Length: 556
Image: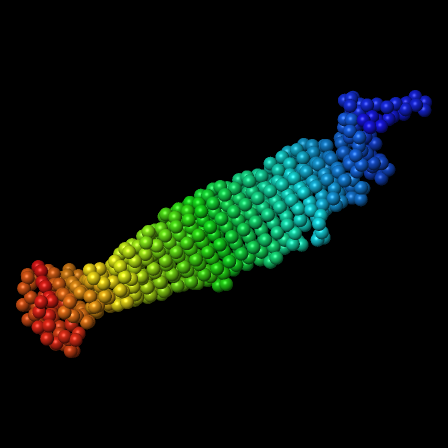
C-alpha cells in the first residue's frame, strides 16, 4: 500500500502504519539496520525510503552501520545512496551512487555510472574503469572534501570544493570532460579527446594525449598547465599569472588573454601563441621540424625563440622585446617600437612607418630589415645586414667584419662604424636630391672601413684607419676631422666627381688650401694629399691637382 508499511499484528492480523511519522520512520530504519547483516549472505534485499514515497524498483539506501566493504556488482540496483559514508562500495555499469556522511567513501565503478561524492569533508576516492569502447559515459561529481578521482573511458568529471586529485585516461578516442572548481591537480592522458575547464585558482593541469587525441584547457588565473605527448593541445588562459609548459610532438595553441602569464614550449610540433594581455613571457624552443607563430598584441611582452625551428612574430603592442635565438629562420612584423635581437638563423624584419624599432644583429647571421619609419640597427661581427629604409631616418651601428647593404628611397640612413673593419654599401639606395646617407668611419687605428655611397647627397666622415670611401652619383661630401684621424692612415676616395667636395677641419690651414695642395703627388696612379698630421688622402682616377681646385675647403 503506497505510503504505508505493513507489520504483523496480534494473531493473524496485520497492522498498516503510515510512513509520514517521524517515529515510524525511525522504527523502519532500525528494522532495516538490524536486518542488514543478512545482506552479506545474499539472503535479503533492503530498500529504505523516507517519508511517504513508495520504494522505487532498483534503489538502495545504505544507512547507519553497514559492512566496511560492500560489493553490489550484479545485484540489479540502479541507484545507491550511502547516508553515513566511510565505506567501500563496488558497483557495476550504469549505476548511480550518492555518497554521504562526514567520512568520504571509496567507490569502484564502471562505464555509464553516475557518482556523486557527497558532503564528507574527509574526501572520497572514486575509481571508474571502462576498458571497452562503447557508448557508456560516466558522470562523476566531487564533494566538499578533497577527493581522489580516477577514471578511464569517456565521461564527465566535476571537481568539488576541495583540493582534488583528478586523473582521466581516455583510451579509445572518446571525449572526456573535467571541470575543476578548486585548487585541483588534474592529469589527463590517452588517445582520446580531453576538455579541461578550470574555474578556480592555483590548479595544476597536466595533459598528454596520444597522436590521435586532442586536449583543450581553459584556465582562469594563477594556474599551471603542462602539455605533452603527440596529441594537439589548445590552452585558453584567462585571469593573471598562469604558467603554461608544453613538450612533445603535438601542436600547441595558446591564447594569453590577461596579464603576467608565462609560457614555455619545447616541442617539435607547430606552436601558435596569441598574447593579448600585458607583461607576458613566451619562450619557444623548437626542434628543426617545428614552426612557431606568436601574435603579441599586448604590451610589455617578451618573446624568446630558440632551438632549430622557424619563428614568426607579429608585434603591435608597446614595450615588447623579441629575441630570435633560433638557428632556423625568424620573421618579425611590427607596427610598434619593439626591441629585436637576432639569432644564429636568418632574420627578416618588417616594420611599419608608425614604429621606431631597435634591432640588434647576431654575429655571423644574415638580417633583412625593412624599416618603414625611424629605427636603430646594431649590426654584429661578420653579420650581413640588408636595411631598406622608409619615411624616417634609420641609424645603423656597425661591428667588426660586418657587411651592411642600404636600400631605400626616402630619408636615408645614418651609419656609425664600430671598431674593426666593416663594409657599408648604399649603391643600391634610390635616395636622390637633398636626402642622403651619412657615414661615420670608426676613429680607432686599424678600423679599416669600406663605405660606398648611393644616389643621394651622402656625407662621409673619415676615421683613424685605412678607409675606402666611394662616391655615389649624387653630390657627396668627404669630411676629415683632425680629432678623428691619427696621422698614420691613408684614406682612399673612389669615384670623386665634379659634384663632390672635401672638407678639412682643424688641421691648421685656416681658410687657405695652398699648403695642402703643395703636398700633392701621384702615388700608385692616384693623386695623394698629405695633411698636417701626416694623414694621406688618395684620389683614385685623378692625377692632376687642378682637378681638385674648388672642391677642397679648409677650416681651422
